[in-house]
Amino acid sequence: EIVLTQSPATLSLSSGERATLSCRASQSVSTYLAWYQQKPGQAPRLLMYDASNRATGIPARFSGSGSGTDFTLTISSLEPEDSAVYYCQQRSNWPLTFGGGTKVEIK
Amino acid sequence: EVLLVESGGGLVKPGGCLRLSCAASRFTFSTYGMNWVRQAPGKGLEWVSFISGGTNYIYYADSVKGRFIISRDNTENSLFLQMNSLTVEDTAVYYCVREGVQKWFDSWGQGTLVTVSS
Image (cartoon, rainbow over all chains, first blue to last red; front, side, top):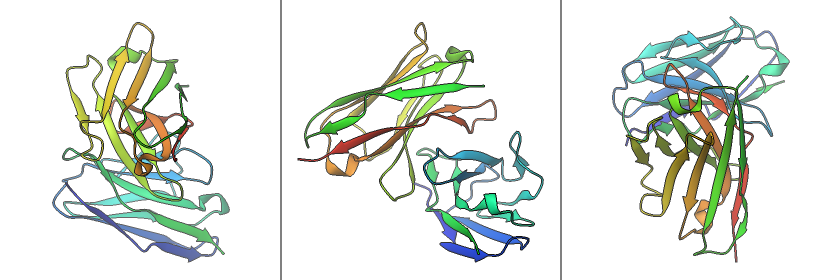
């Protein structure tokens, strides 16, 4: 099973600041990695897929990068509505796995 | 817009069973793979099971293998999860999730809560 480790666990930043979230895989997943955003009381929403492609309707301030074992989700300028938990997920191997999540708080 | 509506959650005793359903609409259900993903209270996401559009491929997480059975009825646009031998560790919100054309989880239901407790 591929283990995804996300860091940091919590990120506390002000509106307008840049957020950098990390996801590290226990073995290479090529670019078979996605990011999801989950707000309290809501289902997750697909943000990025294939490491660097924005899903439909996702603002340009969200970007993804990486391949192999190291991936980054960047929010270039935080908005208040970006307060959420962000999960990475791989589909390189079964079973599909998620990272433990990074909580982004807006000060 | 894709609509996925789960039902069948509730309170069940350890060792009991429950069957979840997911009603899908506004897309051609039979051509999409479908998944169940769960989330224990206050915890992260855990993939549970996948079934391909034509049911040729079925996969399970090790944590549920041998206890849960995923199935679908393409004539009724419905996805199911038969959960047997439930334990307290199965307590979670269960989401019905579509595998999109890029093979990612592109549409999620609102979830149904399963509570396993004596």
